[in-house]
Every structure is written in structure tokens, then in C-alpha cells.
Image 1 (cartoon, one colour):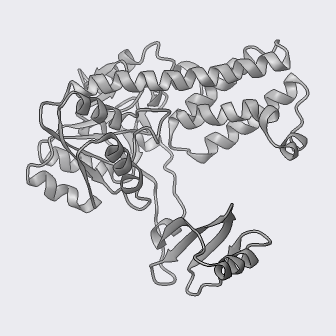
Image 2 (cartoon, rainbow, N blue to C red):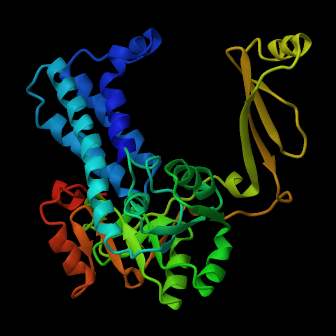
Image 3 (cartoon, rainbow, N blue to C red):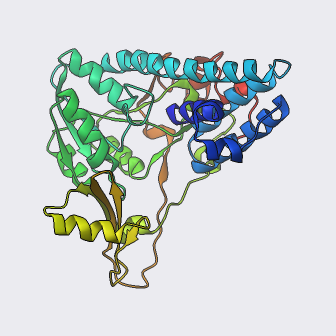
Amino acid sequence: MGFAAISTLIEARVLETGPAWLKAATVIETVEDYLYRLDEVIGEITSTRPTAVNLFWGAARMREIALGNQDLGLEELRALVLQEALNMMAEDEERNRKLGEYGAALLGEGSKVLTHCNAGSLATVFFGTALGVIFTAHEQGKIEHVWVDETRPVNQGGRLTAWELRVAGVPSALIADNMAASIMKAGWVDAVIVGADRICANGDTANKIGTYGLAVLAKEHGIPFYVAAPSSTVDLTIGDGSQITIEERDPREMEGFTVSGFFEPDSADAAKAFDLLTKDGSYQLPLTKGHQMVIDRKGGAYSFDAWFKMTPPGIEIFNPAFDVTPGEYVTAFITERGVIRPEPDYEMALGIFCMGSGAVHELGLDV
């Protein structure tokens, strides 16, 4: 949701604050020009993540307010779209904090929680969904420990969630994805809390790959499995998970690993050498065996972005970014409207709870 709002906010202001070359490249002189360009940007945004419904929801809100007010002048319309994006950002944090309160109430004192991927401030406008529950429970003194799945192959847990928890002072430890079963069997997990990219009418839930496996393990060990997400993630236009498009990502995510960083030359001679390499822009080192490294000048220092291949040549890769957890494995959904349980089933419970929420089914959007 944050990405949709922020991206549209940038587009709404780009002609006023962007560089001269961008202003010249994108000439918007009429409301018709603006609406045409807005549609282009919406298409670009929604095509980036076909599985995640919040992007479609956010984009639909932008389109709806723009089309519903196209009788305004260009500057007035642009200001209105910008304000709607700002409203969405404020609403997102408010939803997350409410969601956090509802979720924290489900946890007892001394809770040990396992989470997967990243559903915190880095994934939302602020505070987060799954991590919002954990942050709130931590503030209430309920969290003893959090287990953080590294979340292969991109390691969002290791790179993002572990950092967010450390900054917030939440006691936590990073584990490899395949360690979850052993930790559960040892009795070191009281609840699993994850986010979601799309929740179907029957409760089937798309989330980062590996979530389904955790749900199966949680059920086997008698551990509650909670999905924390705002009502905008609920897509009642889709009956079950078989209808969700699952994004497949670049095979290089599994073939190797990336390394990025900055450095300063340790001598005048080294500085001259790196200046020479980057005098015409980025310099790609001539590495062998498929490895890649690019060096760029960054002020008085330099940056490097590298990718190192680990797998043998010719290996076929299957790299889906998400999986679908059947609703029967979800103990409850934690939303800003309350905790939703399958009573009598998720199809009815989700329909009732999301009534009047402004989710995609109420925007009349085919996603």
C-alpha cells in the first residue's frame, strides 16, 4: 500500500519538482494529458507485483478520484490526487496501529513468536502489519523472543526484519528457513505471525514463498498461525487461491548472491586509479565464471554492486516469489477492523468484516 501511495505521489508532483530533462520529456498541459499519463503510471506500478492486491487497490483509488474530478482545472486536479496519496499514507499507519492492538491482545505474557519475510515499516508506510503486532506486544511487555526466518532466496527476513527488530529493541534471532520445524518441536514458538499479499474470499492467502510450509508446521505442532493484514488486502473478487497469479522472479536470485557497499580509497594513487576507471560513468569489472561487479563514483567515495554465481552452469531454476496457504491453516486474520475467525467459515466472516471497507471488491476493480 505504501508503495502505491508514494509512487503516485511522486508522479503527481514530478513535473513541479523533477529535473529539467524530465519536465521536457513529459509534457502535461491539459487534464486529458494528466489522466493519460496517470493511467500509464498506474499500469507501470500494478505490473510490478501481479500477486499483491494492495497495489491494485491503491492505484484504483488514485484513478477513481482523478476520473471523478476531471472537471477541475489541471493544477486543482493534481493537488487533489496528491492529497489523496497523502491521505492514504496517513490511513495506512493508522490501520497498522489498530491492527497491532488487536493482534497483541491475542498474545500472552512471555510469548515467543516466529515471523517470515518482512511486514514492518519497510514494507508499509510505517509500523507494519505482522511486525506491527509484534511491536505493540513488545511495548506491552509480552514478547520474550522473536524468531526471524531469513526468507530465502532474497533474505528479506535477514536483511530487513532482523534490522527493524534490532532497532526497536525487540529480542530476536535470525534462523534459516529450514530450522523452523526443529524450533517448533522444541516448544520455542507460541505463535506464528505473517503478513499477506492477497487474501481470497475463502481465506486462502498468498504471501512470500515459504509461508505455506510454516502454516503446515504450525498446524502439526498445535501452534496458532495468524495472518496480519489490512482490509485492503482482502480480495473478495477471487473465490480461492487457485485464481491468484503467482509472480516468478529472476533466476539469478537463486543462482548466486548480491553484495553492495561503499569504500574510500586508502591512498592518493588508489583514488586516481578509481577516478580513471569511473571517469565515463559506471565501470564493470571483467570477472570470470559469470560473476559481476560494477563500481560507481559517489562523491568522494565509491560504491560497488556485485553478484557472485554459486550454481554450476546450465542449472534450471524455478523461483516463485509467493505461495498460497489454504484458509483452513489460518487460525485467524488480524485486521484493523478486528480479529476474523472462520465462524462459521471465512467466506462469510470476511464478507461481513470487510463490508464498507473500500476494498477492491467495492471499487468494482477487476484484478
